[in-house]
Figure (cartoon, one colour):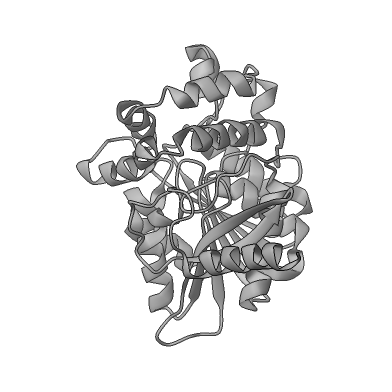
Length: 323
């Protein structure tokens, strides 16, 4: 009688390890490097966590962990992975559970849980210490990860992180049901319109990231993905990290786009309220003053995704901290 559950567990482990179809999340998007899978059990649900583990030709013995933003996944780190591996760094690039090629389970999402999943991934790979490079929502996760596991973090780089202010203090509350309805109504054009706000000037090459995000619209699991998108919006809204920057013990670099005006829930605000918040140059200065070992680099004229909009300037800034 015990053979059946054991066989089921074995098949699940093999599926996660060699990575055949397990749902359709991100299935039609080809990532820049091979994708592997870590089997996890969350709230009694078997799930898998997708990741790329890219090793350099000439290792320098150090590893960088890349944490993606909410509307992204590991795909958009391609140029950063190349830059890091050329310098001898190993790059570990997970899709967090709920994003990309990972499972999208119906669970309670929290930055604490995502951090714990990420720590388990590092432990499974035998990686004891990393430099964390985190963008947008990944900045909130990278901050939580560094607070929970300071012994695993050598340095922390926050690239235009969201969560430098507490959105629930000024953005009107939306129920999960309201947010889910909004996610279900998404279209290619609505994703594009939102992403256009990431840049001072839109260019055709940015369309690729819209294509990647919009691929979920064609998934047979789109309703599941939309629900995960809704509850992770609530996670951002309800779980601020901006009150804890002073508790970070690791050297931290803030790379801020001077033209970034991102606000989570911006569309719920009147124009006058929008102007009061999302002021990244001021938020960056305020945040770096809270850090024990903080450094701020502002990139004039750059929006929310410096590594896409201005890669040369982004890499120059990064090289001051990750030589």
